[in-house]
Amino acid sequence: MKNILKKSISCCLLFCCVLLCCQACGTEIESPDTIEDILNPKRKEQETETETRSGWYDAETESETEYQGFFFQPETVVLTEAPETIPLTETLSVPTEAETQPITTEAPTELVTEEVEIPPEEWENAYRAFLENQGFQRQISADVQEADTRFLLLYLNDDDIPELFIQTTMEVLIYAYHNQNVLYVDSFYPSHYTYNFYYRPYHNCLGSLQGSVMADGTYLEIYEFENSRTAPSGLVLKETYCYPTRDYSYEIYAERGMNIDLDKAPELDIHPDRQNNTGSSWLTVPDVLENSTSVQRYEITEEGLNAVFGVQDADEQEETSETQERRYAFG
Image 1: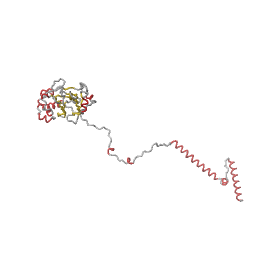
Image 2: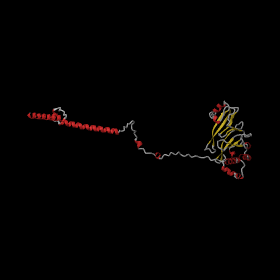
Image 3: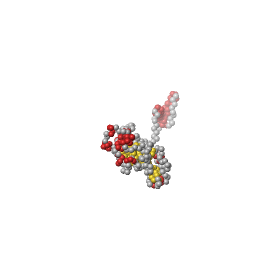
Image 4: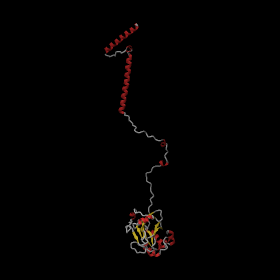
């Protein structure tokens, strides 16, 4: 007990001496709070040193962070949509042969077929040889007399080569020149009362008056042709129309299945239910036995052929009929 008391007194004296020295030097020393602080004065200094070091590190780290943030601003990426998921089948798909072919920007070249201009002498000689050899006799009626037959050239379609018409009192035959041949196109009957027919130049249209004056009424029959590259003659009958000349006849012929298309009438230049059914674009080809100054018809004689095609020279006349039949198709 005495030893403890002595140690305590010694410690107190030592503390007083230290306190007096600090006051003399102007240094403030915190008074010990507990007996442990009195007995171990260095513990407080160690804790203070540890706190000081820890504060320095934090301050240095914070200063470095502010420095980096000032010069190096990190880019913030905001994902607004979920990343697209590529199916496994697409990633492993192998490009086809068509996909690997190089893409060309040039437009494909179209095969343009130029129309070869046919000199008039070519189709004129063909028509003349056809008429001289009576090629139309295969289609003409046996009841038609030779004196009742005439030929004429009409521009049925829109090219520069006319079509050859053989007109009789009973029927009209149409022929066309195609690929160095004279070919049969079609035939129709003229009017039973006047033996004439109607012709619309360059519009592929022909017409004739049919029906009965006393019974069901008359009607204008229109034949519409079209140009066809597949047809040998270049012409083919497209449609046949019926336009009665009386109001009550429409119902009668419609019940018979006749093609009455009033919407097509303006395009064909037809005026139904009027005294003059055809418009101004139509021409009337009169009866074959009637003389006409508007439409020229010719007899199939040497004189008639020379009037239309001109006189042949000696070289052209040397061509034999056998060669002509082999060169031209009659029918």
